[in-house]
Image (cartoon, rainbow over all chains, first blue to last red; front, side, top):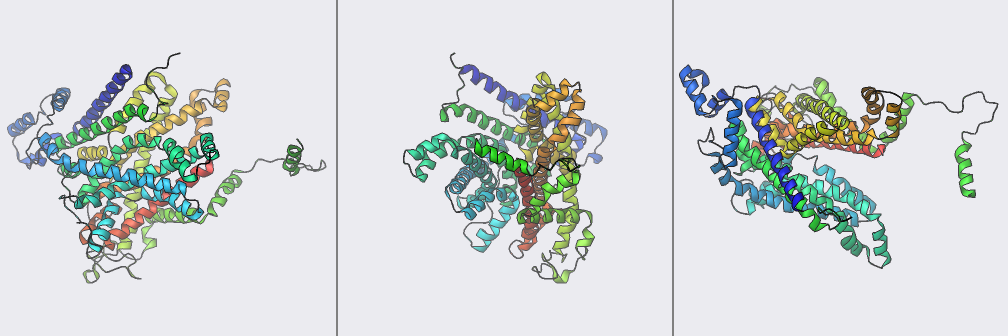
Length: 316
Length: 305
C-alpha cells in the first residue's frame, strides 16, 4: 500500500511539474516578443524606450537570463509559493490568488454539490420511470445539457430569474443569494455528464444476475434500484468527479465573467486581456494542481468505496 | 433440433434458387447500394433528419451566406434599432439596427472555419500521437502517454487562454488554441482503438501475410477504423464550436464589426433587460447546431454497434 501510495504521489508531482513546464514554455517561447507584451501590460510603450532603458527593463523582468535559467528561477519561486509580480496590478501574484480564491472555491464547491444532486437525481429518475415517452425524454436531456454553452445558459438564467422573476440578484459577489444562479449555471454541464454516465451504468447493472436475485427475494422495484442497482452503478461517478474539476475551472472563467464575480476565473480573463503573463502562469498552475490533487484523492478513496478494488498485492 | 432446422431453411429459402438459373447466387453490393442501405433508415427518423438539416443550414451559411438572407450584415439603420423579432427581421435587430438573423448567418463563416481548423489540428495531432503510441509501444508509448496525461491535467479553457496570451487575439489564434486543447482526448481514444485493433485476426493475418506495419495501417486498419474516428470528430466539432464561442465571448475572438457567434452573444449582454433576443436568439441557434451535431454523432454511434 505504501509503495502504491508513493508511486501515485510521485506520478502526481511529475504531472504537476509537466503542466507547469508546458505552460511556461507556451507563454515564454511562442512567437510574440515577451518583453514588449510585458511592457505593454504594465502600461509602457516599448517603442518609446531607449536601448539602455530596454536593457534595464529586460533585466527587471528577468528576461536577460537564459531561457532555462529563467525557468528554474520561476520554478523555484513557485515551489516557495512566490509566483512573482503581476504586471498590470503591481502586486504579488500569490497575494491576488489568496484574495480571490475563497470566491471561486465557494462557487465551485456549491456547483459540484448541485451537479451531483442534479445528475444523479435525473439518472435515477430516468432508470425508475417506465412510461416510454418520459423515459426517452429524460434520457435525451443530458445531451441537451452539454450542448448548451455555459455563458448562454448564464444569460438565460439572469433573464428569467433575475430580470423576469426577480428572485436572485443578477450580478455581484455578496451573500449566498448571489451565489445561486452562478452555481446552477456552472453545475449544468457537469450534471449532464454524470446523468449520462449513470444512465448507461444503470442499463448495464440492470442485466446482472444479483438484480434478478434481489427481485426473486421479493424486493420491490424501488428497493432493488436503491439497494442493489444504485450502489453498483454509481461507482464510475467517483472517477468523473475528478475529471470534471477541469471543466468546473474552465466554466468558472466564463461564469464569473458573466455574473461579475471577483474570483480566480475573472482574474484569469482580465489577465489574458492585459497579457499579464505571470498571473496567467500562476492561475493555470494552481488549477492544474487542483485537478491533480482531486484525482489523486479519488484514486486513493476508491478501495474504501469499493472493497473489490485494492491496491495491496493479493497473496498467492 | 427441428426448430433450428426450419429456421435454417427459412434463412436459406431466399438464396436457394433453382439450378437452371445462370445468374450467380450472390453478388457483392455496390458502394452506393451499401451507403443507401445505411443512410435511408436513418433518414426515416425525423429527429436525425431535422438535425442533419440544421447542420447543413449552418454549413451553407458558412459557404454562401448571401443566398440565405437578403440583408447586408453591416448595414445599419438607426430607426429600427433593437426591434423585436418580426416577419422582416426574424431574429430582431441589434443596437445599430443591423438585422440579427443576417449577422448570425454571416457569423457562421468564421465560427465554422474556426471549428474546422480546430478539429483539423486535433485530428492530425491526436491521430498522429495516438497511432504512434499505440503501434510503437514500449518507451515511446509511455513518454507520449505521460505527455498526454500532463495536457489532460490542464483545464481545456485555461490551456487555450495561455496559448491565446502568447500568440495574440483573433479567430485564428483562438482556433489553434482550441485545437491544441482537444488533442489529448483524441490521442487517448485513438491509442485505445489502435491497441484493440492491433490484436484483431484480420490484422494478424495481414501481418503474417508479409504486409509491413505501414501497409497494414493504411490498407487494413484505417478503412475499418474511420467510423469511430468520424463519430469522435463530429462530437469534437460541436465541442470546438462551443469552445471558440466561449473564447470569443470572453473577448479574445474576431474584432468588431466582424461577427462570430460568440461575439454576437457577448454584444447582446448589454441589452439583456430591454432586448433579451439580441443575445438569446443567436445563442439558441448555436445550441441548435451543437445539439444537432451531438445527435448525429450519437445516432451514428448507435447504428455502428
